Length: 263
Image (cartoon, rainbow, N blue to C red; front, side):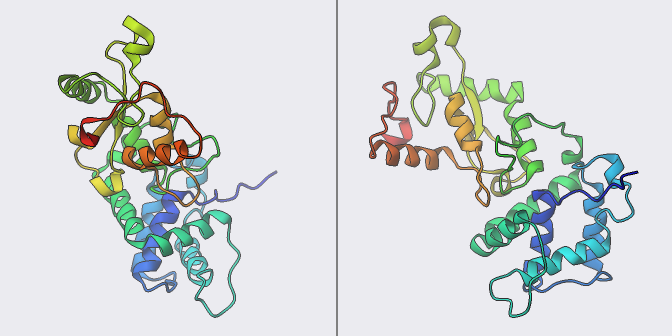
């Protein structure tokens, strides 16, 4: 009989554990510390693992949470003692907190707020919350799930498209692709909607139309595509990447026209 082991820590869990260590001056926290006890209860409630895994006595217990804080402390480059063994995701998260401390703490706060409101517990899994490499965005899977669910809200999407059409032809705000021009009547009124700013920065409570962007499918995917230790990118950042690539011989789409904000 094979004994089930506690699942590997997800990025959401590592964001929360890392924030705890950073706030403690990059020092580990002991099992009986109230903050460890609180985080243990929080992690045990997250809708990230199967009920079978969450029922294990060792699953995100105070002991396991304390051990993870030790991983963060001892694998910091400035730690003088020996390091504990931990996986690559933990090492990447340590690097993320070192290089982007403020951003990571905001992400942790956004996750905590989403959990406290109950919203994150009710969201169904989204097909694109994990990319083809199996790595979620730095915000963690739950915030990506929340962002994708909001972007697919038909009422919000319709309002954003109506607003964009009132300002001119409906084109991708990054590359200028026009579905109607490319596909005729079939493409009329079609575009995808994306959050301009990550939820951990913009806040999890409300979504305004000004916080959304109209994108083609390719640019939408590239905004969401994550790399280990890197957050998703805004449309403006993606536009800069395209310009840099065009300078290396990569051609921008012929349908590209300046957005109002660029003129």
